[in-house]
Image (cartoon, rainbow over all chains, first blue to last red; front, side, top):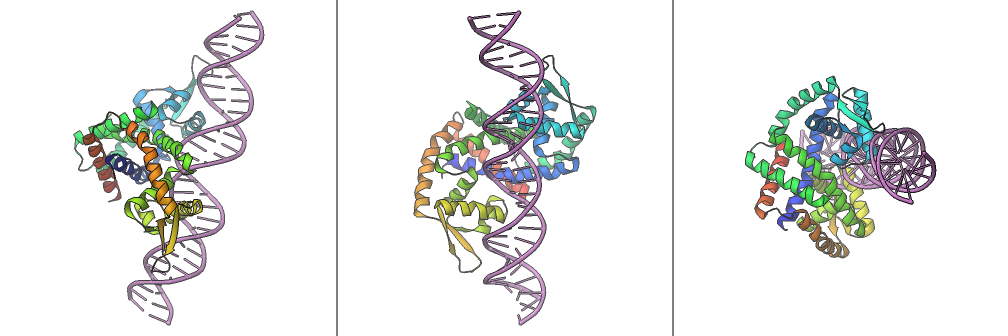
Length: 139
Length: 139
DNA sequence: CAAAATGGTTAGCTAAGGTAACTATATTCT
DNA sequence: AGAATATAGTTACCTTAGCTAACCATTTTG
């Protein structure tokens, strides 16, 4: 087995246990990891339209509609009309901003534990490899 | 944003484009990436019972039942009764062994392209990081 | 040998998407 | 300017890749 195949093998093997664990942690906040992805995007990079969210997350518009509808329902985000009246800008509510901080703190020990025994440097290398692959695929 | 969060962010962002592309490549063989995962396991490590497959792939027994049923239908694998009469050993058929070779060759350019510009050494480091995380999570 | 454990299946559910077809607003092109 | 085209978002319905609960059939254990 070549190194390339071994890498992709490991990549896929990690996916389910990781996502399951994250969903377990997020249950407390009535969130799934997909919704958490949206909240993190809004936190890290500010308000986005639905289409922008779709492009960033590599998912289709209807999927974003549903994710955002649920987050609005819970009260973590709100939508405001853009200058372009077709557009809806999605932004965190005050409650949303608050909960994101709380969740980030809550997840911290879990993520730290997951990376236990891995050096900072290796994490950075792995991060760059993943980013590079993503760029190559979408090219 | 800390490095840890950045890593997990990249990990998740890569998942959908990657799996979509793989499924696209596998369409030609009437396979999904989940089924391909089973074929690869049988190729790399020989015949396995359903429970062994479930443990290896971190999925539940009923999911394995369905994956294997489909592969039997297509004719890529067959099941033989184990010494323990409850057990079913899943193994590649001749056609299955043949097709795995073909698919591996067919996927090669795609995987190489995905890793273009990444050094062997960095791939190895990234692979080890993923394996380590998986071990930490399941611990 | 009865009770518990293990391997596998069936039935029905869910998360996290996707496509097709539509409305409403904006943009472009003659 | 007005018609054709493009873009943002939604609705309805479909799919992949899982899941749990409940159930057989064997095997192991007390």
